[in-house]
Length: 350
Image (cartoon, rainbow, N blue to C red; front, side, top):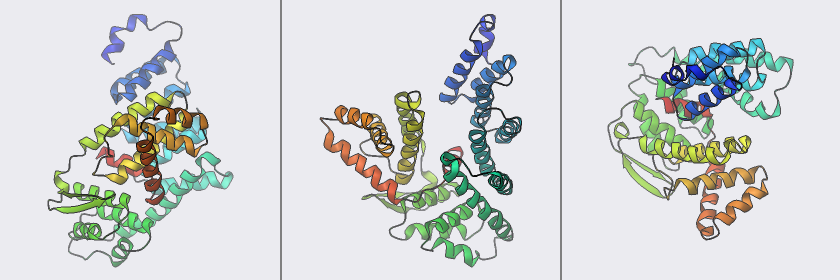
């Protein structure tokens, strides 16, 4: 058990204990301390074994610890026992299955749910995308498994997907090439990056794939009028990760407890923008400015006029810069390929 809990064991039997342990667990999760969070939620579970927040927090702790198989078992139990919000639990369960590559299971579950009733509106888009993606991956995986030797050429279909006009097909091809241990997979990705006017997000996917393959030759990257020579093997993602973590901390402090919906929208906007720019960082590198820019874009999207007024007043002396960055976020967000966030999370784990 966590040392903190051991030291404070003499004070754990008091009113409001479970609530306090949940708060401690959530604080530990925010600090990316999965083990401490897991210990707090386990302790809370001893007192209220069916408390939805306790069980959900325990599952999140398992995810933070990288114990995805256990987390899936946990979400499966929550669904079967009807604990907590069914569709919130289902969304997490499906996302974990996708990360684990269990696409057939995703198809079976979502088909079964859909046969009984429509998905709720707030989950519909995500579920339909995951269902479509998983159906394709089930067939694609069978096809890719047929490529058994590095001496065979890449399948013509895969090459055609990579150079098609469809961003979705390009994305799928890049994901396949990233996983393939094939002599021509790396050169195909490099060739993709050499083409002009590639989608920013797909460029980022290609760069990340070359990082994973430890590609050690120079590549010229151009995004948003900025240019850079990179060697994928030597790329250091720590700078961008550190910037995004500080950005999320700021956004969380501003919104997570006051407006959870706006918080999620703002967080997603920040993720899309930074991933689109990779390996560049936003300019200027000011966390508070960018946090407020994403906040503004999110508030505008759902019609929160009061938030817009507050932010405009906050930047009355930097109005031109602020609105320039707001417009930049809107333009990039509306033009880039919208990849599922599961893929982004997977990149964070690599």
